[in-house]
Amino acid sequence: MAHVELSLSGAFVPQARTPAEAEFITGVERWAGTVAVADEPCLIVDETGAIVAVSPSGSELLGLGKPSDAIGKRLTAALQLIDFTAGAGPLEDPEAEKIPPLLAVRSARLTRGLLRVLPDAEKAPLTVDAVSTPLLTGDRVAGSLTFLSPVHY
Picture 1: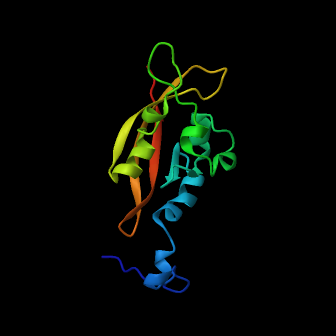
Picture 2: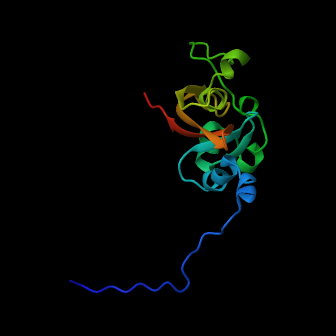
Picture 3: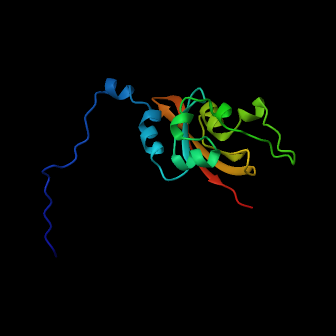
């Protein structure tokens, strides 16, 4: 049997927070920094549907431009959502409000669905699988975290 000694000098110690201080850090804020640098296509919206964070690959996939340019924009206004008809017309507001990132906020439940977007005028429409989970602050939904995956036919 081997003997192993571990040094605790310089060990990482999480910063202690009082319950009052912890309330100021929302579930959205906890995830925003991670999403902003993630390799996977993902994004966070707040309870109003505004983009809080988007990964570089998520921004590219959805045609949002630079991630920093998308921050603060309402998701349905930033995306060129189209319907699943052969004509690929713009997705109307009642249906656009049912996309997974927004539905997860309203329902406070895990949601999954397909989005069809036009990422660029010169590119073909793209179908994206979206899985969204609500992000909570206490017992209140503060936003949603969505992972995106292109669907290839």
